[in-house]
Image (cartoon, rainbow, N blue to C red; front, top):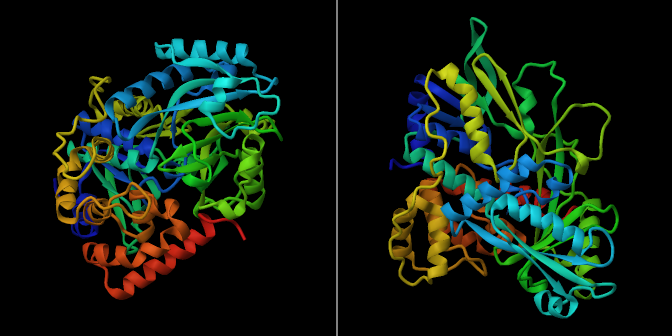
Length: 524
């Protein structure tokens, strides 16, 4: 595979812009990546443009869960739940090490939903998935399952299963699959406007954010998968609009609140479902759900009120742990692109999570949707685009992830080899060469290898330091102060691979630290 880095980008940008494409995908989150992957598999000539960085928006700041949407059963969205649980099972089968099963426990304290009602919901949930996957534990057994859980009024708990992932790595894996079959993807490309000819979208005008250069790019069809930004490029006047809703999370060191299961419960203040769960060796508390009125072009950030809300949720289940602000390692906030009709405003958590497809000649816009169902959303978009492109859709049930011919990685346990195979797929041989060169040493207390940093800097189109530390790896979330203590060693390893001089490195560090303090730490 041809190198995929900033040098490659600078050399090929003009050539890529001069071509005429079957399809241009705008948006580098999980939906855009899925569309590119499916189009490339079909043999379409396709290009993806992302205004900032791949997974920069919602797809690196989600709740990390690949789930079937149990809560949607209660609102009657059975079709959405059925599709989600089946896609969850596909992802577990196709991407082990990247998408992993996670057990959830719902404690019962006498309120709604009780064990019988919740068990009934799970019976339907499991039936949609095609397998029984839940069980009830009385209090005596629950003590061993979830030590430290508040026992006041506690009757027992129900355990069920969903899945968890590293959402940013999922996007990168899907993009890697797309590029392996001829698709191309560029970050740092802001789409300014769509161009039209004879009443039909015929391409777009984009700006290279790195150089300021403007480029006109032609395409038979354009697919907009821009999430919360969907209303910016589509024609005005539609009754359906995007309602940006913010979901924020707290991350604790794993030792501070060690968990073997995700704990799912209703917040005592408003009855919303919230979670405390293990992720990447740490513990996550999430999520909130409220209207996001801030500038979408700036990284979303948690508010002080949201911090209090999430700490109160944790205290309601684990009061003896006495988790406080001083325990918080990092935070993140993502903006959900929820489709709303704009009429009488319902509570954010009451908005349905159904997606929408809006079509105009030459252009298809995807709005809303779920991380779990990205493949199905991609196929729906391509079906709408196929008439403009003049190509049939073809087989719609092929695998998203090609099996990787995993080389033996010396010094790594089978579990760590599984993790790397899931995250890197077809790029595993390139990563293995870095493991041979650098060894299997991990960065701090994380599971991330120094070899992963080197490979990302060399071959995963890193344009800025936050790309490397917040999305290609999650070191900026998992290590104190955004990995401040490791920056010098990261510089020694990665600065030559990134091609940055000392002045550029210093500038990148300053920008990254300011961003981390503003958007990934506790609010002042």
